[in-house]
Length: 431
Ligand code: B12
Ligand code: SF4
Image (cartoon, rainbow, N blue to C red; front, side):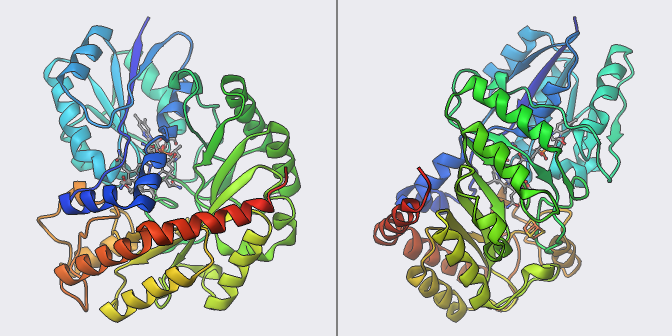
């Protein structure tokens, strides 16, 4: 029987050592980083789910690869090793692929980063998958069976009509968290967004497939915690009642990502908490700067914050996400952000550095104007390391300003304050 070995690169990444130390010393950040690191790679689980029974398979989720892993994989005698990596881990993935190739093992790589940089990836891997794996995976496997692996597989940008159920069993007994996707892409096109348009167009998953996935997760773990790997869950035209019925019946608890407009939709507010949603991540992005491509997500600040209040009144905690480092950022605007976050009623916050992921308008603009920092390679694309020359500050000033935000916002007192807000919000959560 042919064998495929799946190797997703996972875990939390920060490049600069002082950033890493700061992150680990701040209670608010440490907590979030360890929760995040528990999330599995849905891309390869999905491809495993559509791999025919005639193939055997193995799964190695890696934070850091080493020679022992290479030896273990050699013992499995795979016909192909399928690797998935994001920008921050892609250089590690390339070196890992080379180590396998040196031992005569063939590799194929896919994911957001290599879909945008396939020529770069081709130097390190036998084959590169561009776009959604669902569209090309059957062809890849059949080509391997016929000893005819092609150097590149390109999925159609419209996206596949197939929604295979991920093979969650590969995660073993009772994983701490699951990921599940109910839609892919986003109708907006924020110019910094490193996810929504890189793989395929905006599509919603049919409700029966979501039901099967939830039921499979429930069979494996009775009371699971799920992070929806959606780009913008309620941005489409789906029937929200059907959606909420499905989640409520499954009895799971879930986190998701949406835009603030759900706070103005009574049909969503009425049932979001009851369906099992405990937290929603909302990109508030910046107090002062408006990014191109935000579409209807761009609105008056007070209106967005009223929507946030409405969501929390409905029993669901809001994790407000902010970006530091937009064009025009200054020490004064950073101070305003700190004060705003400290005073706000947000139950959780996430603050990251603007990061020009390849494939985004932001990346193209900064590259064209020579502002990407040449000494910061892909491993710095972590959302916590600066990768470009700011326009109105020096690199050191912006780095210093960002560390100041983290210190002020994630130290013990404000983190405890947000815990209290979260508890208050949760009191409205239906029992
Ligand atoms: C869950 C998640 C994680 C999980 C799991 C990561 C993983 N390996 O999948 C964890 C917590 C580990 C994680 C970590 C990080 N993440 Co993250 N994460 C997400 C999240 C929320 C969902 C990703 C997901 O499941 N997508 C759904 C699956 C189905 O899509 P997919 O993985 O792209 O796979 C499809 C295709 O790409 C392709 N494919 C993928 N791999 C392969 C391989 C082969 C062989 C083939 C044929 C096809 C193929 O087929 C799949 C099916 O269509 C996204 C945000 C979002 N909404 O997308 C951010 C996101 C992907 N993360 C991001 C970032 C920045 C990070 C971190 C750097 C954060 C940090 N500082 O640590 C780290 C990097 C970790 C690493 N190893 O590189 C960015 C990535 C941008 C980029 N271009 O790199 C995103 C887009 C968020 C953002 N703010 O912009 N993350
Ligand atoms: S609203 Fe969110 S998911 Fe949609 S394009 Fe903007 S950043 Fe990306």
